[in-house]
Image (cartoon, helix red, strand yellow):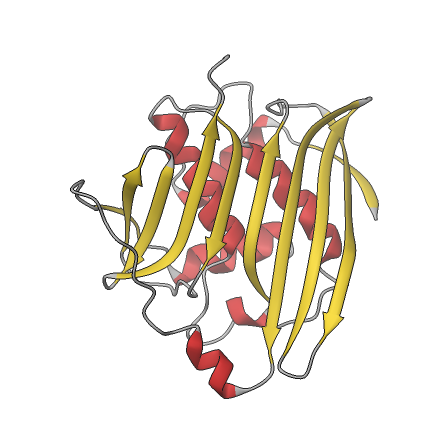
Length: 231
């Protein structure tokens, strides 16, 4: 599926205000934001109850305001097994003949309670001596605003105990990196457990360019980045 979009300063300001983005993006926009709009093209094609299990964002060129983006998103593989369903998606953002970014996503939907309970088990990772620091606490209002702005109406984000959107975590993480003068050309994230609204999320950079997202001393997600050192 293909579409076109232009993001202006007013729209960017709305995203910054709604989700407390800290970096002064100026004429640029977060790569993840463009990816959100590209991935949203599949909103009506992907059933509810799917969780994002893993994503890889490859940034070839940082998008800018008022670019006429060409968005493309497709389901490139799907499997229906006895215990779970699996989807692999590919989303791209381009401008003229240049490809700005590629977003690869893997989604999973479990079919029995035993497997669903596994999502809540403790995932322990060895932490180094660096201390974890309090990073974010996403509110119910932020999750609802993200659903409204992105068109992501997956029911897991709209229940009484909603799951924070993976792309919202990714967006705020990219913004966090930029406040530290770190520019990523590749971001990989594994969502090990659902992150719920109202929970304090801590970050720990366990080694250079590898982060853990912790909630209640359990690992909810793991992020690795490749920094762009040529900027």
